[in-house]
Image (cartoon, rainbow, N blue to C red; front, side, top):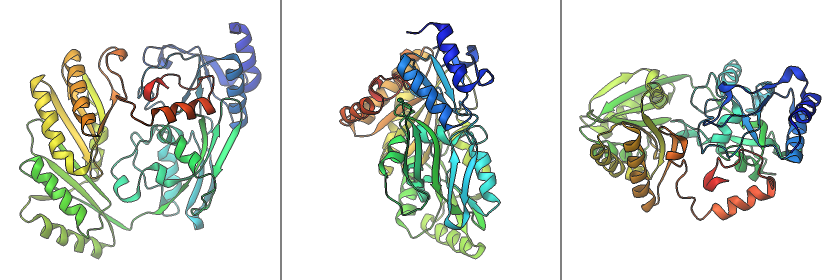
Amino acid sequence: MLKTSAIEQQLVSVVGSQNMRAATAADTIARVQPRYVVEPQDEWQLSAVLAFANEAALSVIPRGGGTKLDWGNPPKSAEVILSTARLNRIVEHAWADLTVTVEAGCTLQSLQQTLAQYGQRLAFDGLWPERATVGGVLSTNDSGALRLRFGALRDLIIGVTLGLPDGTLASSGGKVVKNVAGYDLPKLATGAFGTLGVITRAVFRLHPLPRFAKTISFSAENFATMQDYSLAIQDSKLAHTALQLCCSRGTVPRADILFEATEAGINEQELHLRKILGCAWFAQATENVWNARQDLWNSTGNRVISKISVLPAELAKTTETLAEIASVHSLGWQMVAQGTGIAVLRFDGQPALLSAAVKQLRASLEAGGSSLVVLLGPGEPEQLESWGRPGDAWPLMRAVKHQLDPKGILNPGRFVGGI
C-alpha cells in the first residue's frame, strides 16, 4: 500500500486540499475509524477518487447525510469516506413530463420543497428527510407508508448514474417514464448499500401533490382483529394512499389510513371505510401519526431496531410470536407495520437478552419464508449479524459484486453474506 503522504498528495491533487481532511472520531463507523474524508465537487472528481482508491486498494465508504451509516454490518475496513455532500444540485426538473434529475447529495427535504413549487412531489416518505440524501435512501432502499400506493423507490427511479470502482461513470435509463433502456442498473443500485458503485445522480418519475388529504385513525381490541380490518380494507375498492398499524406491549392496536383526493371524494371514502369497519372506534388524526416509524429511534437506552418483512396476512401471527418472545426475555416492544407487510420493530431490554430475542425471532421468521434485518443493534456490533440468512440469491449477488467491484473496495463486508 502507498505511504500516507503519497495517498494524501494524490487525493489533494484530485479534489483540492479544501475538499479533503483527516477523519475524526465523529466519522467512525461501527467502531471502525476511517483515515480520510473526501468531498468531491462533481462527478468527475468522484470518479477520479474511486479510480485512485481502486488502484491503491483503499476501501471506500460512500456517505450522504449519514443518517443510516450504522445500518448493515460493520465494514471490514474504512480508509476513505467518500462524501456526496457537494453533489447536491437539482440538475433538471421537467415538470411537464413529471420527471426530475437530481444529484445524490441533495436532501429529500430540499428536493420536495423545490418540486412543491410546481405542485409536484416524489411520492416517497423516507426517514429524516431534512438530512437524508437521495443517494443514501436509494442505497438503503428506505421506504415508508406511501409505498402501498406508489411503490418503493425502485418503482419510482427511471435512471441512474453510478461511479464504478475503476473510475467509469455508468448511466442507465433516461428522463422519460416509459424509457426501459438500461432498466436493470437503477434497480440494481437501489438497496445495494453502495457495494456496487457510488450513486452520483438519479432520475425519478413524479406525482402531483394532492389537493386535499385526511388521516383517520381507528383501533381494535387485538391485533388479529386489526389484521382482519386491514385485509378487508386492502380487498375493498377504497383508494387509500397509506395504511399503517401500530402496536406495543400493553396497548390497544391502532391503525392510520390516509386518503388523498378531492374533499367530496374523501368524504365518500370515509363513509365507505365506516361501513367496512362497522363499530370500530374512529378519530380524525393529524399528520404526526405518520412519524410513528421514525419515532422508534427517538428514545435512547438498550434497544434493537429491526425491519421485518412478512406477508400482510401473517402480521397477526408474527405479532403474537414476537410478543411471546419479548415476554420470555422480559423485553419491551413497539412495532409500526405498513399495509405491505413491512414493519419496523423495536425491542428494549438488556443487551444479551436483546440479541437472544432477535435471533429467536429471526429463526422463526426465516423458517416461514420471511426475513428480519437489524437496523440498530445492541452493544458490540459483532453481537448481532445484520442480515440473517443470505438465501439462494447470494451466489448471484456475489458474482455481480465481483464483476463490478473485483477488488472489493466499496463498503467491504457491509452487505448480505459479508459482500
